[in-house]
Image (cartoon, rainbow over the protein chains, first blue to last red):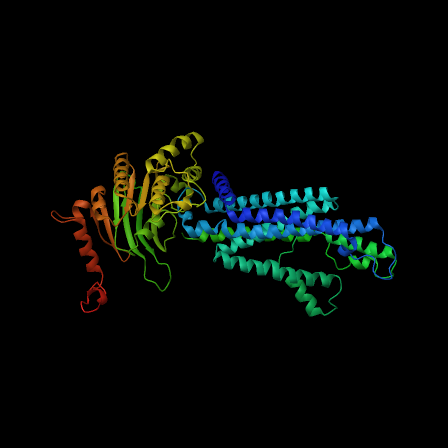
Length: 301
Length: 257
């Protein structure tokens, strides 16, 4: 236990001194402030330019509902920034936390001390997760501040999204950590990006379309999408996107244009992650942590 | 007296198609003994000490470190290891590196407060405030030796400890080895500096291509009137095929401008 805490403590000190993390945190903070400011300014100047109400032939738009849509969209933009920077930070931590010790020779001194490889791995993961929580937590606090300054909306979803951003970031970080103990850290980051971001996004989108009935009833295609779905991470999320779709649908319905109903808007938009997704996330986290440990354990330095 | 470390029939190769880096090495080290492990580049010295420190796994053979396997963390509690080309977490400072390693050794807060400043002063790093990434090779070497003695080990392994040190640093390391020997600590010294080994070691083993070419007490290995260097060169050359002219022709050719 002492060994784990010592490794975690000094890994955190090291991480806090890495410029890349500081730069990403600052850019993330500036990005949140800039997006919040820009969106609100644009919304106050010309609300219709931000949303989509008031087309030719449609009825009058309820200003309160339009505000609601704008607020939700604004919050979703901020949530997107947090999620994006959480992933960048996860890459930055995952690429350096263990790789540099193993490659620089620092591990020689550490492993010759009475510390087990399990304690070392646990300390590294603990520090990496703590760093993620602190950085994403700070960005989230700033987002709350920006929301409060500009009117707010979706505060509940905001907290869920913060937790989800940390959870998604932790998984990406563990994938990069696991890969970087087997291969060069840049290649590890590229492989993790392709797997976790590109492939997972495509597969999950296909699966959402399948669930919404958009892919037809081709049994082979449905089977392939279902199998692929359980081979990739499912990014955890709140129901903010669905709330936005619902609000947009209500806005259109209120305008009385006779177009799609609110249910049509919501259909096909992914809702909050369910228990299955959370269990799948937990399984992948344990699996990746185990892979990191196995790689560290077999590593000869 | 129980051996601090005993190595028996140790074999190791890094890839299947490669020859053995270590091929049947056997020796024992007693408390208070200074053992010199000598050999040309690539003779397997560093591989042997890394296996003793639990950093490499042997393919065959047995290592007993304080009666246990080197993979057992408890066995390494009494081991101090200063690697060749030491490196450390590069964003830490010298005192933080020592505090980190002291924590891994399980030293109490009081002990850390006492030992770290004294160890830094011994290593000449007590005034150093920069992070390790800004250190010279010599400073890293000093820090490597400092972290190795921090836990007051019963076995100190020094792999090329003076390679990057200035003459004063070398003198300090010699004094350290003498002092540790006198207090019953076993020292395993890997070095190319044969004059240094001759000064401080009681026993030597000369390795060539992973095998022990000769081993014994210094007086047995180095006969009267000869030096350790004479014996070393003779043994190593006898074990390796003749290389002929050592210098490239463009150096020795007088007609080439």
